[in-house]
Length: 436
Image 1 (cartoon, rainbow, N blue to C red):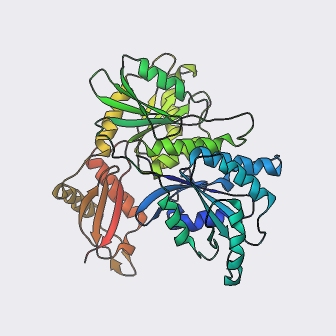
Image 2 (tube, one colour):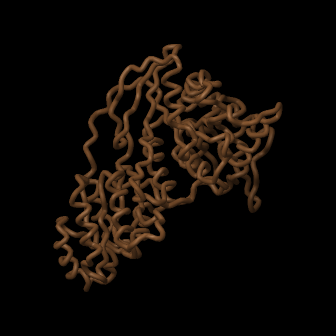
Image 3 (tube, rainbow, N blue to C red):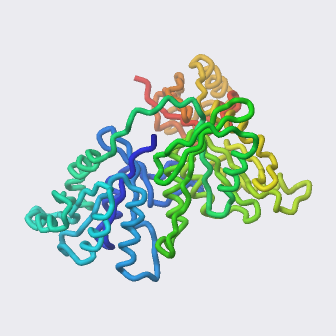
């Protein structure tokens, strides 16, 4: 089941990004300083009182050459489409404006719960003016300050109180995977080709993504899969000018609902910056990942074409060195038969557990071959390691001082683990802890 989605909506200059950053906190920080890992702040993971959710900053959707009223309408409509709860943000310094009223009119027509937040209440003397916003018709307004963090806790209490009740999940023994990528890379054609390639469709299951259907099918060897529908981009006329960022929101929903993500590239067009952003989300979410190069039949080839394209992918997606690459054609069905087996293999690696004794043999051999680094005449000591989680496989390494673990040595240990065990297709996480 995917995390609930919270959207921050409001007219320009009310402080949406400040509130977004305040709620997201440290969770928005870049995990890896690697080119291609997303730095787009339109979407972030957040947590409050043990409840995880995804956060949308509608202010991050850049719309140009549009009238003012159209801009705020676009933001509200995008949020209505995607969100489970909407934070409607207004500004105490301007009071209730005509633009606020117009946003409110759009939100009235939705069935999405709305929490009203009055921003920039930095001075206690302004609190009496908060009551003016009752006129918007969304119940109690919450006084907050994005700059100073005032009232954020009360606001989030109200937000999580409106999260939808999640029914108990039905036992699912299938592997859930999705295909994500830019428009026109051939996702729909691949979906149809996969389902039409000697597959038996078992059932259509209503998904948590709006207007999406998750399709369950069985492959020729009896393996069960659920294909997570990415729901596509809804572009009504020119409502959504920035379609790439809107596609990103859809992709995030699909990623949340998947065990394995197939990042689809267009062989004919080559690699675009947006491909790297989308793949970066799947990587940061810790999902199993396969790079699928579609439309391979349309490429003029010689004996070096495939190796050359793979080299380019490895250069552009350095942070996905663990991801297998498969070149396919939805049109000719070329290599499509390999996908179910490959998805199964990546899923097995994604859920793999390593015994502590075996893991520690690998760690000690690695340290013997390449001794731990020193810093300020103090040497890093690695005592032992153990696996603490799967999906992705996560290992805690107990050391004398975590600050002595240089990122290059951490990468070395990760590579030694990968050389000893098959973790292709899945990220693995190493966490250093001080031994008590």
